[in-house]
Length: 104
Image (cartoon, rainbow, N blue to C red; front, top):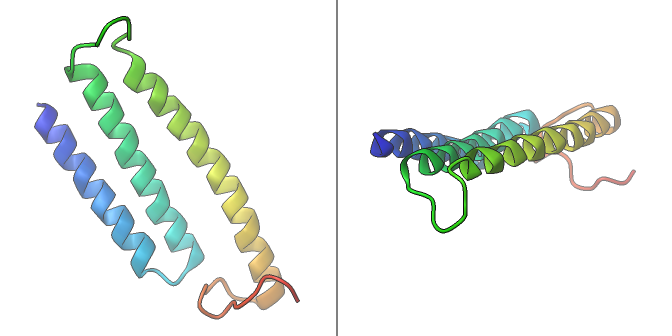
C-alpha cells in the first residue's frame, strides 16, 4: 500500500516540476508549484501512516508536517498572486518572458 501512495506522489511531483518548467504563464507556474507541495504532503502522510515511529515521535507527525505544508502553500499563493496582479497592472500581461524587470 505504501508503494501506491508513493507512486501517486512521484507522479504529482513530476507533473508539478514539468508544469513549472514548461509554462510561460505565471499562474501555470504557481499551479505547478502547488502540485509539488501536494506531492510532498502526500509523501509525509503516507510515511507517517505506514512507517513505525522512531523513538518518541508520534504516528501523526506526517499529518502535522502536512498541515504546515498546506499553510506554506496558502501563504505562497497569496504572495505570488499579489506579484502576478502587480505585473498585470504594469505590463498588461502575465507572461514571464515578456516582463524583464519589475520597476517601471
